[in-house]
Image 1 (cartoon, each protein chain N blue to C red):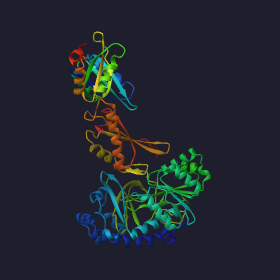
Image 2 (cartoon, rainbow over the protein chains, first blue to last red; image 1 turned 135 degrees about the vertical axis):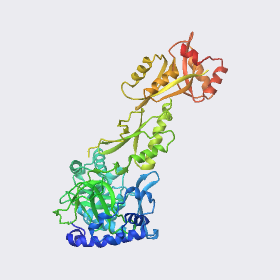
Image 3 (spheres, rainbow over the protein chains, first blue to last red; image 1 turned 180 degrees about the horizontal axis):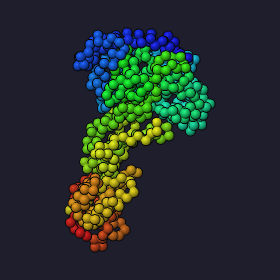
Image 4 (tube, rainbow over the protein chains, first blue to last red; image 1 turned 90 degrees about the vertical axis):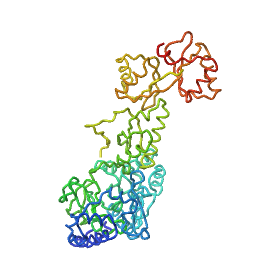
Length: 433
Length: 143
């Protein structure tokens, strides 16, 4: 079913007319209200008036995650704080997450997009949604929650963690839609099985999974183990949160981007050149309806391609393929974004610890594990085992405190970390995604 | 009156200990006493050798993380209750033993124990006050 028939099935020509009108307004507002955008435009010798067609978008400068960090915390906001009703933040380096804001209208826009997404994923008014995305600064929990309410479904705001209690709730309440990260969904199934509860006996029909990359084979595994139809949702807090793009359960072939709110482009990550439809490259978004936090040509670093072919579900909106990788070194571990540089700065801030490290990511059962190997320098070495173990504990704690991810810290001998051509290999990802 | 001990960080991997003994053998360093403390991931090897500086240098050159610590070598009467008398004394004086291990050679009729204290100065004072014999480093390395 389609939540917003008028927009989601709009003929391309009409859609593009709306996009252009909204793009112009966004650019004018960004230029007038956000000093960063004005400087970017001036440096490139462009004024808002130069944008005279949708194609002219490709002439505008990019915005990167570093730009957002440089303007921490509120420098990218285009409205005064009195008009901001919500603030979210994504994990960042020590004390420097990416902060995003929403006006009341933005929150409503977002709820509408999530209502569209949930319905594209099989949910209707009569459904009960078990929302196991984390609530808090992370956009997943509240994003899905508002969408579920907008749709008129009954939402259980169970959030992440406390898995055994979640199984009891699933058994007793009988929710029909599951929203979670795909790895947590599999973890739920494992814990349920340990408790003697079979997902097949539960009432789930559809699952809306996202916030981390997952493969077709993982979809098959989830569908087999959980006895539901698994669909993919995409979003990022910088653009709005979940609900930027959503797979339809009818086709399960690519995620429809809600183009009446976001204009996607695919670029060559090396040159910045825009690539034609069908080619694989880095996904770039321009928001065209957001008030508090507009983004102009924001580089997501996600690698995908766009497919403009009509879809059997009736939506006219372009589809992006499942994200296949990153054009930077970001890792997603149990839904948490982790950059190796963040681990490095945690280590640098600790006395005596040298930033010779390596991250090893594995998937044990269905959950991702992060092991941080740290080379033992002379300064941190001790003949007493307990002081070395205390060091391991302190590093684990700091990583948890700053990044919000649980890591196992392992001390290793110097030079134990493989160096290729003098450059240390920082990440070994053993997950098969 | 102190003796020097070197300690080496080792990953729990096959052959690491052998690597250390091999390097020492090649460089003609004699191991006088040794103890290994381990966890599931790593171990700390403690050594008393006849040439501390040389051992430290060659192991560092081979890429090991090496530390140097002061320890006390205490003569312990080789009879029932010999070790207990010393530990009892230390406990009464509230001196904490971080770890200890036995030296290979006897000193006359006495055994020799290597002690690592959290407060070496205080420990030395207490032990000597009670008339127990502490063997200095130079004597120990040549025993």
